[in-house]
Structure formats: C-alpha cells, structure tokens
Image (cartoon, rainbow, N blue to C red; front, side, top):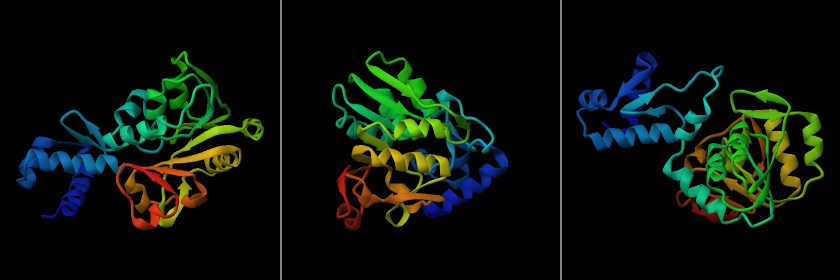
Length: 244
C-alpha cells in the first residue's frame, strides 16, 4: 500500500475513532513504527490531525477554541526552521508586524532582540507579553476565535500611520502563487500592513503551495522574501528571494 492510500484510510478511521494510536496503526497496516511515525507527521504538518502522545486525534471543530498550550504543540521542525530564518531579519530598535500564524508564533517565542512589535494575534500577544525586550502593541477589536485574531476599523486606522521595518506574514494558501487567507477582515488588515512595510517577508511551509483559501492579498512576487522549509520549484525560486 502506498503512503497516500494509508493516509486516506487513517483519516477515515479517525472520523470514527476520534483518537488513533501508533500501536493500532502498526498492527492494522503491518508496517514499522517509523513508517507510522512518518505518516502521522505528514498528516499533522498538513493540518489534518493533531499529534498527541502515542498517536493522533481529530482537530477541534470550528467552534472550539484551541488552548494556547495546544498551539505550542503544533510547532513542527519545519516551522522552527522557518522561524530561525526569520529571526535574522530582526534588528535592535526596529519596528515589526507579527501576523497570525503558528510559524510566526514560533518566531515570537524565540525573538531575543530589543524591538517594537505590533500584532493582532492573541497567541503572539500572550507569547510576547513576558518578553522584557519587546515593546508590545496588541491590536484589539472583535475576536475571531477560529484563527484567534482581533480586528476593528479603529485599529486598522492606526496601522495606516505606522512604518514597519519588516512585516512577517504567514499564509493559509499559496496555490498558483496567490497568497490567500480564510478571513476577509484578516486579509484586509494584512494588505494595509504591507503597504507600509519596508520589507515584506512571507513565511510558509512547502505544502501551502497546494492549498488555497478564500481571500487573496496578492502574489508571491509582491513579497521581498519567501522563507520556507524545503527547496521550492524553479518557478517559485525565480519569483522572489527564497531562503530555505
């Protein structure tokens, strides 16, 4: 059985069982522990399941708010690698925008430079609030629980008058080179941020090139840098500056 066939069957079984263990899958498919570990890792990195000790579980439904600690558990090696690349762009006394993204959240966890940071992400705000080196500006407004960000027209007006040294933007989808997001309000806020950013940095794992979402804010070519986990296609490499 090919990996994609196993992954499809695992997802079908998970819809009935809620939680699947490594031992169950080893016995079911008659494969090695390393094979199941790779299968679980691929499903988790694709955002289809949540890793738990000894197995995987279904993702929370849209009306469930994932806890802050659970968000930290989502950090894959790919996200850590991208965050480390992004950290190189942060200079002392600079002004930055940190987007809603678990990859940017990892950057918020490791940043160790005296800087001013604006964010509309609840998780980024929590992470950065304990960092004495950061002058944190958490944007308020209506809370969107699924993707855990705040938005209000008043806060957006404030952003129009701030010049950011670097804007760190995540992406829900990058299919056909279009940078897309799930929420219209979130997409609009990012567009304003990018208008006032001296350097625009896009953070995205490679699998995002197969995904697309509802609201596009532009193309990869609109960004100065793309930070990703593995070498992308030649077409992407020629579209912008890529670090991986």
